[in-house]
Image (cartoon, rainbow, N blue to C red; front, side):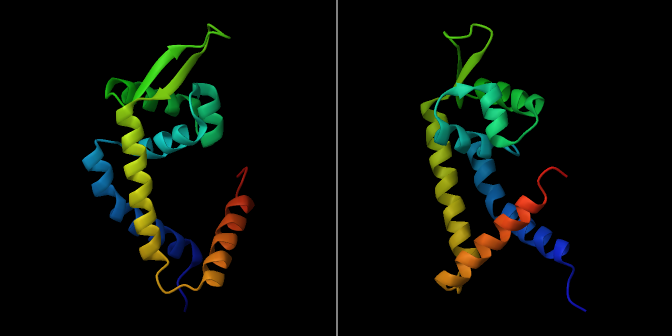
Amino acid sequence: MPTAFHSLVFQLWRRQNNALQPIRDKLGLGPGQPRLLVKLSQLGPCSQNRLSQEMEADPASVSRMVELLCKAGFLSRSEDEADRRSNIISLTDKGMEAAAIWQAECQKVSNTMLKGFTADEEECFRAFLDKAARNLEGL
């Protein structure tokens, strides 16, 4: 009997997470924080609300992460001059360096994961994962 699909997806996630956890620990980051740094590096300075929306994450969770990352020196917060009720979140030099290191390490893990895949197989795999993720939106 073949392994259940959800078990395979979880196994892949767990192995990827196990490969990346030492890097996250070395950078001094907690769960979810590397993703926030990378997203902010892609967006540039933005409001915490926009960051939550772009990450498709709970605003309260993002708020807690932002607070911790500011205290650790990865992020800075400044008043939004257009809307004084809002703050603009930016990466510090430390945050930019951590995001770049994380992205490079993720690429190495992805390259290892996809070793032996043809370009067509990689493209199909990416399309299948994207389609499966879209199918679960809103659940």
